[in-house]
Image (tube, rainbow, N blue to C red; front, side, top):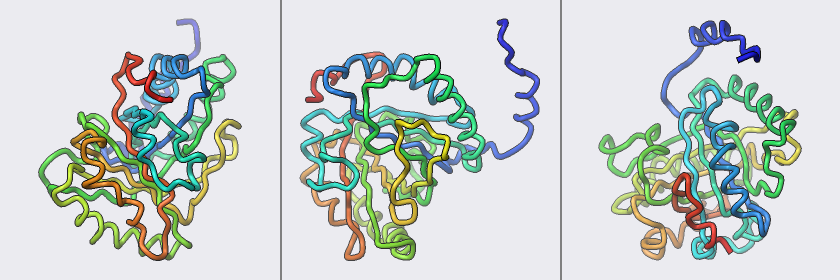
Amino acid sequence: MSEETRSETYAELAAVGPYGVRPGHALITMVEPHPGHEYAYNRWYEDDHYYAGAMAMPWMYAGRRWVATRELQELRVPEKSAVAQPVTAGCYLSTYWITEGRYDDHMKWTVGINKRLNRDARVHQERTHVFTSFQDHEATVYRDGAAGPRDFHALDHPYAGLVLQVIDTEGPERRAELLERLRSRELPRRLAGSPAAMVTVFRPTPLPGDRMTYVKQVEGVDTRLTLLWFLEQDPRECWPAHFADLDTLGGPNARVELVAPFIPTIPGTDLYVDQLR
């Protein structure tokens, strides 16, 4: 190749810094393609952006795309959500793990590459970011203890569904109290005997000031928790028995702002695109 790649720098970077497998950070992004652009958006994201704008980046080591058909969108609560307006907005969800301790390094690259992709007309404009944020890992609670996949396997293991849950509290102290209650009591109780194998809990971090203009600044940095429930069953098969009341999980000093079920996309296909509306 004629382009300068500064190959010698890669050897220097590989020799320093954390390089574990723990998902210390995540990118969680829920997007709504504009009406009439669903197929084009899906092909752009799967054929280009998932790789060039995510998986090819340093320290982003696992990813998974999820989709909410209209049937799944109609299971969402609450009707008046601070996250999605209307609550059915955001039919595609992408989740990515970033190596613990590498958030700053990754962010420098992601801002740079997205500016380049935008300049080179490799960004699909006919979409709205409903809920997009980088987040720091706070806890993982497992249904089966030491048995089964760990959280660093979660985006590669063939889970049949995912539930995105967002909870707002009244302030940082209330969030800390909620996190402890979830970790020690509420989540173990909910997971026992359920089709969910684990729940990962994250807190959002602010996006850099030089982010792309089509991505809005993150809300709830000091007050919000984001939960990802990894399901061994299609959520449509087990929703009433296990997840229909997740909007009560926050307790008296918190408000559940979104409970949204998804199923995994099938890479390389347009399966489910005709079921979004």
